[in-house]
Image 1 (cartoon, rainbow, N blue to C red):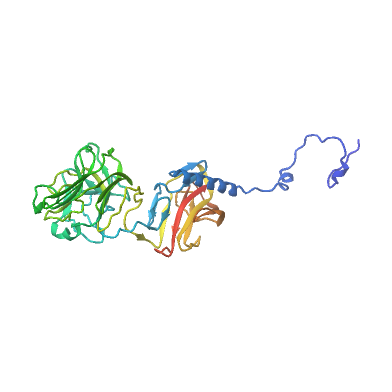
Image 2 (image 1 turned 90 degrees about the horizontal axis):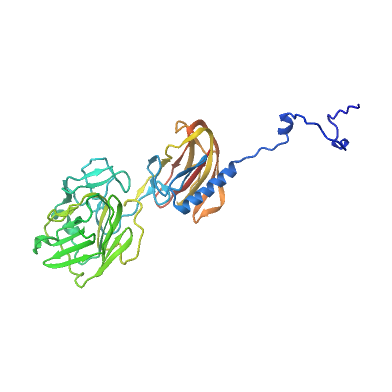
Length: 436
């Protein structure tokens, strides 16, 4: 039998026959196999998940080996000098206080505090506090709200507010976020009052806004015996639920809205009657004679005297942030705990951001970091690569390069802002997806 040595022979000498099964060394295979980088594929999947989450306004969620957040709700673990707006995070947040604002009651303080401050810029005093506190049990924005109970109220003296609360023939608006306690439905509850209730004399001149026992809004004003008493349509309130409420007067017409939707309007012949206030103190959560006491929570109670926030029955979107502009040059947002099934050492992803003002330099004005061990060690994303086309109008996509991190089972992202300035540079984070 002839033995042919195949080493270093040309393949064309083999013209017929078959080879017996044989073992090939791994080096003989791998030297001809090209490595495949799956990170771009992972990033594309993450980008698709971000688009779907945006379309559905989804809260943050996990896929196998991925985390997606488009900030439809605030699920961040730690925020320092940043706020979550309507679908984005920024170190510049808040909403400008409307022109002609005379009173604004807000809550962002420690649990149990009994210090209340008017933040409208008018600096109306709130010296009278009866069984009201700030509470962290519920909050529409931030961490606390005003806890109102049915044996108390807060307010101030007539002399300190008469010029601000004297409506005359002005247009005006009052609005608030409210939450009614279970068991307090179908009963009269005042939101804000300055006189306007009781026997006909100058002491009772003024006005009050309340929810009636039949679940209608009622605006009652009394000036020397001339009364304006108008009501909205009934509304089906649900206990322990946050509602945005507003009453506005524009010309001779009153408009009522709940959650931005009209629930009635009134045009009355004496709506133009001058609404002047008497000597009674103003009160939050009670009538001028301490009736109809509120039972629940209140936030962002605003009184605007001199212009109307609503001038028609048209719907509007209630604020998704508290009043008051806040501008921080720097800020940090850190993902909440994200425990995974096995230890990870590599993280990448996709980010959506918008230059609301100015133009950000990624890696300087906006940085993304990853950790695999719950924040003990952070490593900045290895690269920031633009993805075209843009995600949507003004919103850009960026691929976050695969980054090596210290092994662990708690995989998170951290975003840092720098060099931010109101009106000149605001960088908004609209979404982030990480894969690991």
